[in-house]
Image (cartoon, rainbow, N blue to C red; front, side, top):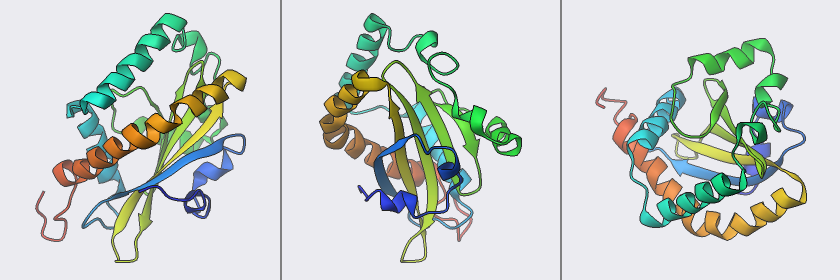
Length: 202
């Protein structure tokens, strides 16, 4: 479910300390039935497991195939355009103890790089010629006493080109990508998380 930007800014996340020059693009919530306060690392691991084993819907596969093909043809995703090239990694802004937490994070084959991971929030980043993107994940209590996952996309577009790119892909994000992501992430909790944590079943 899409949330207002205040759903991100009102939380006492550490990410706020390091992203004053980023704008909040999207904030979404994802259900995790039966989740408790200590289940955030379980959820993150479930998402990464799902990424490496899932099969995206045809529309999502098509959109990403087009995006990666354009990136290859136009040089959007070269090392020179990415992290440690055009883009300064967010990890360079972190205190040593926070940056060190990324070393213990569960690896994943997706294009994002780890920034940090704590008991209730994590940040990952992606840089290319179009944008510097931070994916922030947070663990938030709900009114029914359980917990849900919040995802905020924080972006720094690369000039006018980056702003036009973000505007162009907006309808695809809302109509295709995020609905598919919601189904996949909520299913990841049910398949790989801990929905029966009170009984000890997995």
